Image (tube, rainbow, N blue to C red; front, side, top):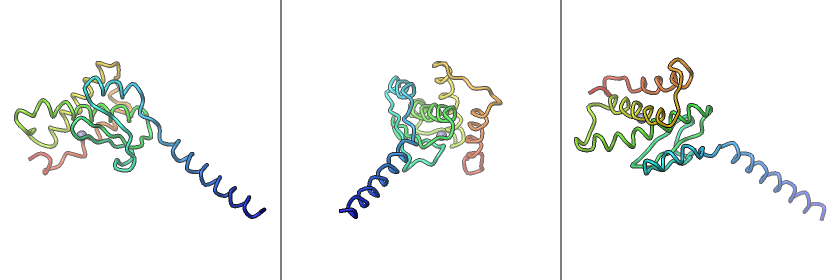
Length: 145
Ligand SMILES: [Zn+2]
């Protein structure tokens, strides 16, 4: 009888640990979900397939990984939304000039939408420094052909 009580105590602790792990992944802010829906897009958290501090998109669906900074998460969301909209702009031609120009277009469109919704970051602040670093990762011969 005493042994059984100990077993349940251990199982109870196991579930408490799982609960804490789930809590560490923040929900997508309602404001971003609302903006996405204005553009007939969706945004969801996906820590399994997105690296930390990264997002991705396909069609009108946006996925965000786990972010260390809410400002960086927000600008990453707008970048992915920029991809959603840029695919509509370039769809008549079927492609952009280069991968680098595709990324630049998504950044510019996304930052424009962000600005329209009251989001603006200091050019020399951590959010825009991070954004430029992301764009720079595409600066290669392969991505400029
Ligand atoms: Zn991108």
